[in-house]
View 1 (cartoon, rainbow, N blue to C red):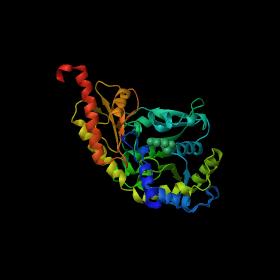
View 2: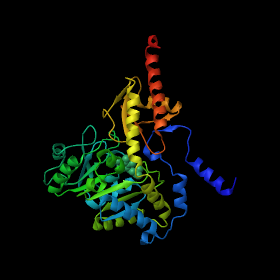
View 3: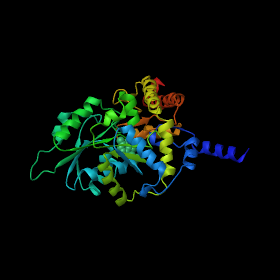
View 4: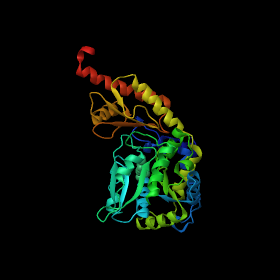
Length: 368
Ligand SMILES: *Cc1c(COP(=O)(O)O)cnc(C)c1O
């Protein structure tokens, strides 16, 4: 075998695994094509705007979102934090859903670093209307914090992959704008939301002050997200990027992965959404599964299993070669992505049904 062929085989193996991984779409791994694009990236000094590949990626994502400018950041978490830092002052309040990533899964960066409080809205699937929002927005007074910012997830994560319709987005945006608030959209799974709604990305985020695309959710990149907004917003975001230690050097090696993903995986989200429907259909053959929402809108299937706690079920599946995630005391989550084919989804569903049915048999041996 030639050295190149051996290197290519090693690269292929580097992406493979021995189980079916429905834990998260963050588990997608760089393909050999992506690794080659990274290896040959043209690079420069990112923090002096001299890395041509990073500049190209930022321009590409800004164009996708129909926004003026973009900035490359290490993670979606930093995109959310910097958006809060730009849009608010310490002591202000941010409204978002109770299960939003920004609230429960970012180590309270909003409080610890931006000094803001969060006012959660309790909606079953992370999609709420103007009435819920109106209850969360505080009226001006000497004693109340100022409600300064709205953040919504499109599509939602821990509440089961739900999507906002364009009308729903515009309703909360207009309500917030009329009260002088800034509007931020956490579009970590932008392409899944676009595939589910049939509305293009720029249309979805039009009139919002900031939005970002995660390159590590379903897009196989090892690192990175691009935060977009007006030129002025991105200038301010750059200051925070420096302060937080997020400014980089030859980041073109990473940005090349993002450009490769946008070029090669743009259609993947529709397939992942379709695979989630396949998974839902296959699992529905067993009455042990309760789905919430009742059917998946995007690539996430959230469910409970009769006779199992979520952590028991995820452990039992793991020992049978399928990885799913227990997200709380009630629900599990299975996420479809690039590295799981439809055939593997069907196989995983078979394993999950078998595991669930074993429990019923254990409870009632007469049915075994
Ligand atoms: C994953 C995720 C984030 C954080 O992104 P990282 O790149 O993992 O930091 C934020 N919001 C949502 C909805 C997510 O799913």
